[in-house]
Image 1 (spheres, rainbow, N blue to C red):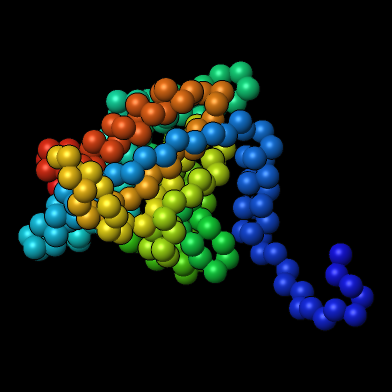
Image 2: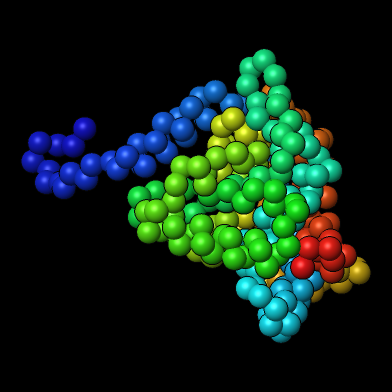
Length: 235
């Protein structure tokens, strides 16, 4: 409690902020959450995106868009992470719908890219740009935030190296993405400077264990380090 003589300004929680608080409290109180983390060499993905920019074909996918697509492709192979979980059962979802966190003045919103595994990168780029604009103008309908089986949260653009986000129930997992910055890495036995990123996968221990999460995260890293092959059918 503040001391009686302390002066302060009262700021009421917005409706969205209250909803975020309630959902977060439910998540941390009811889901046994744990995480695994890896460092991924992003030089191939940086070069791939430069190629997209140079092509001049349609809207250029952001790194966040590329992460959405990569996650969706990995979820095809590991459907246990594209699911909803409760105390009694795991619901494996047929469609791969990926939510992504968007910061707004009212709080963080989670718009969803439906069937992200089937959409080309140009379509994902156009769709996320529209969803972000709607979210920041307070026009994002609730229906555009429903149906996700997996979520990504990217704090890289604001300079955060790594973090463990909180699962959005009833989902099984969420991916935290840090900054893409130069780091010392060992490549072919030599220490070199490479642009890289920390990826943190947070999981519901009722639905998955560390071995399953590690394999999924390793596959996601492989997709990101082999973009020409991984995105060949979706660019």
